[in-house]
Image 1 (tube, rainbow, N blue to C red):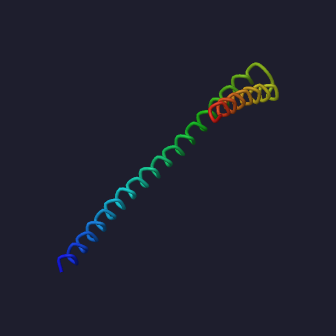
Image 2: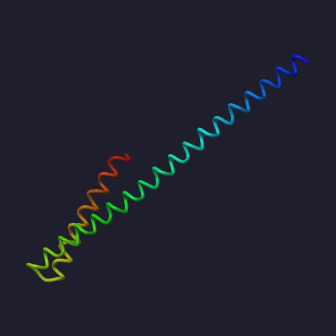
Length: 94
């Protein structure tokens, strides 16, 4: 009888440990989800800021040159920044 009681105690303690691990895992998953949400929101805000930067550069250029030339200048600046970003990512991943 003592052995049976001891086995039940071990099984109960094991289930308690599993329940605690489940709660910890659930908290971890929720934290990861919140981090992903904040990263996505930050990415959208950065894209919006970059859009307004390029829109401002375009508006500045059309004061001095034609619309087509201003569009080409802004395209060249955006291409240069994209190339630099890709180079930094490639160096970082390597």
